Amino acid sequence: MLLVIDIGNTNTSLGVYDSDKLVVHWRLTTARSRTVDEWGVHARNLFALAELDFKSINAIAVASVVPPLNFTLKQMAERYFHLTPLFIDHTVDTGIPILYEPPSDVGADRIVDAVAAIYKYGKPCVVVDFGTATTFDAINSKGEYVGGVITPGITISADALFERAAKLPRVEIKGPRKVIGSTTIDAMQSGLYHGYVGLVDGILRKMIDELGGKPRVIATGGLAPLIARGSKFIQEVDETLTLEGLRLVYERTR
Image (tube, rainbow, N blue to C red):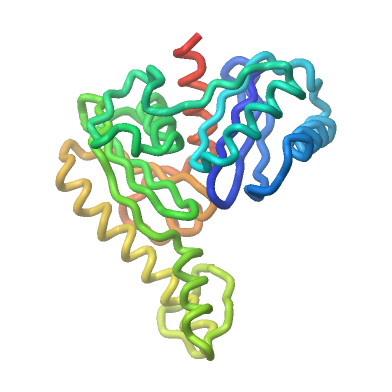
């Protein structure tokens, strides 16, 4: 079986594949101070809870946008699984030409998202990944990664509002029932939600025009279901898209 690990700035997702079937997946907080042994203990505990045999893993693929954790994860894989993990980056043969300059600036998560999106939904397509930052990735009708957009994530926006405005509280990010808020919390939630949906749709409208060919728009990431409900352009929500991309890239490199 294959263990796939997506290390983001805020969350880390793990999944176990048996051939092309995702058997189980988990989401953890990305703790940069976590040691090799702590990662190993977490992995063992997750496998025990899922009643999976730890020794059944025969390969590991990793997409990381947190370089300081790469060595820690490599050591964990070698110490606890006795495997050398495959770290995805722009040098790995994914089958997708990267037209971004320089290609090394494209995050591993964005590369595998593009691979999975083409495989599952066809081309052209746009992937919106709602993480610490929200990224928009454009794949043209030739299957080339042509570039994208990076914006602050909605949680960053909410945190900035709370930290910079003395009288405003920290609020839960949710879709309010109406736009006009009758309390400060309602007003903030409306501004965050509708403002962010407006940002997403404004960018998508222009990307779709530039790409042409009626691209399919796929959303992934923790807040994808929430934002997609208010979007006019997001057609699919696929919360395990990155994990699937890791599997596909690993299979291609075998």
